[in-house]
Image (cartoon, rainbow, N blue to C red; front, side, top):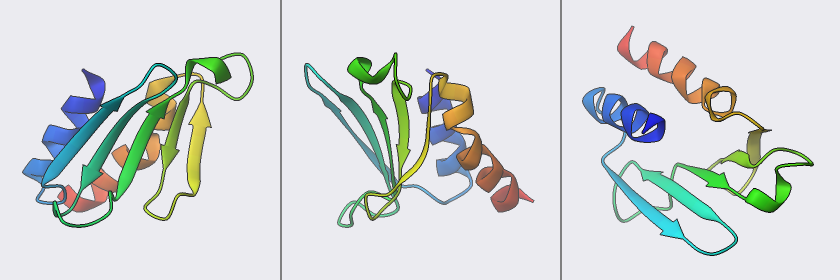
Length: 89
């Protein structure tokens, strides 16, 4: 629910236009796109097998670089929340 709330606010700000979900047995991925024909601008991944190590959640950038990783989704989404504040402001 928290991810879709962020997605709705980014759409309202005019930054994101499309999204995709992929759910596999070992990973769940939410990908947000500026345009549907591009690579995703950002991916939010949940890998339960990493929950005891680096954290189950990861924020992955457009080029595949892990931007943030952690145990709590709200902390992983913090860079996107800050970007939204700049877009609206």
